[in-house]
Image (cartoon, rainbow, N blue to C red; front, side, top):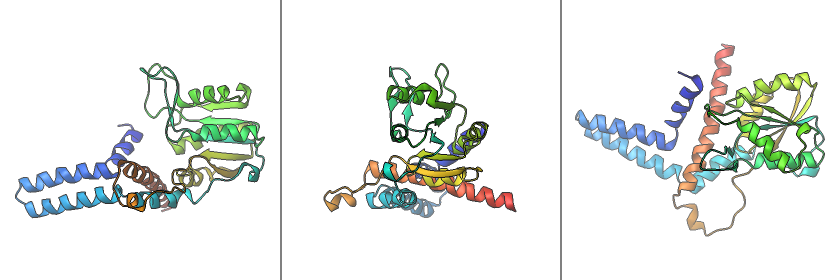
Length: 262
């Protein structure tokens, strides 16, 4: 089995809704063999997971704990670099019935890279990102991102694309050779603020100077009646899930490093 597919399946079953599915199956099995008490306990655990994961306070805390590690900076505070490296994410391919590339959650990174370029922070933008799974008849995400940047005024000669990476580690590996060939020694690393801790930890192994340039931010100052901080919501559940995705990735990289050293 494709290793990335296997990781995605395991991850999906480790997120709140995936855990609920696993617990529901275990509960059914335990009740079927006469262990109704244990099955009922697992049912309560499932309810606790769902209520906790969908609580806005929990979701905001988890996301903020990642986003605040590399907070967004004003353009005027960012120095000039050799290149801007943008990690894939957020674009939806123009697959039918859609007739054009669509901007989804996390795609602020492309507009932010455009703003950095326009502000003279680098003369080159490197877009890295293939499709997670093969999409017959369609190009990679980086290809469509390049089209989008050109529509926003970035000249084609200022854009380089890497179209084969399927995760953050491959983003780094596949981009490294290009940067070396162009003798690029300083880059602005652009991705969402949520993803930046994991991405920077992977990219910092490269023998170049890397400056995190966080793009989209999920948790912002927002005034609303406090009661909504306690009411479970699907939006909060989604935020908890994406935060756990990042933490799982960080822990996996840490575990891998320990195994490699030992």
